[in-house]
Image 1: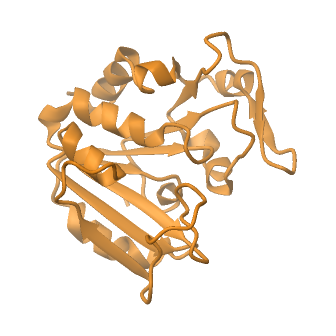
Image 2: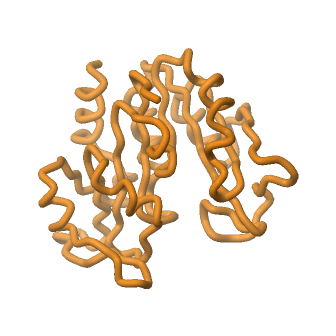
Image 3: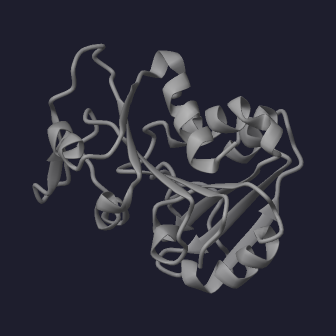
Length: 214
């Protein structure tokens, strides 16, 4: 499925700044009245977002789609609203069962002009206007979903925690990884960000603005 103005933000691992990138884009382009979506795939009472036990698991159904109304908590969906999103949704599915939730999600967002979703796996089913992958070479993990769609990213956001040129290798325990030079060799744009600047900068915002033609 193609959405005219759908932006996907993925990443190679957990807790590397993906949500902060979403928040930064919403905040910088708040005039677009974003609908923001957080997708969490759960399994065995463990949160797919941070790998810890939590209450977000789907209890009895294949998926749950909820609308955020709170603006003052620390939840990711709350951060989307606080940044200026018009609507914020949280889709929780069992691991590997995202496809079952897609008709419901589509019906919920297809009338919205600008939609931004934090997910790699959705790239398998929907073709966005823009797909960005966040890469942090200091994290030695590489999700399968990120590997599958690595070369489909339109650009890479590279997290620099050393304040120096990044040359480390990101990989999983099987040794499957990539170097930053690999990302650069794909002849696609890449942007260096730091935690200090909250994983976003003007170059990224300008790139998103240009791709969305706004």
